[in-house]
Image (tube, rainbow, N blue to C red; front, side):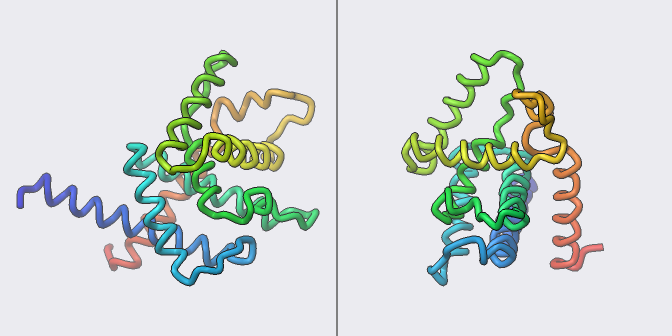
Length: 195
């Protein structure tokens, strides 16, 4: 086996490990917010995420961003002082949260409102095709997750209707991606006992 094929194989194993660990850890931590009745759901969710990553030709950065958005949204649900679980708006469907997170992970940082709408509509259509959800479902799920993230953004400008800082950084800050990277590296080192 040549070195390129070996690196691809190692990369695939590492990706599967990271996806599997993220899904299992997230489902364990936030099970009380979700309505999961299937004992084999984590395997289905892992397979779903792998499939969406492949079909949408997502990058590693997009994977990290999706994970951060999922975690951020579930933290908002968990920490809501009103006691309302935002997951009820997604019908407690974790996979719909994953799809919305993929949509919101696509950079859309132009100042041209018309161009932002075109890019957003293109993302909705892409992830509708990739996941099999209807265009309306993808649009609605993304709108729900977007609204919760904006509402719970700590630096949200109360008097500014456009929250321009979110357009500049997206829904996930660079520091959050770096924190995710550090946690992932530590977890891989501990699991595979690398030093």
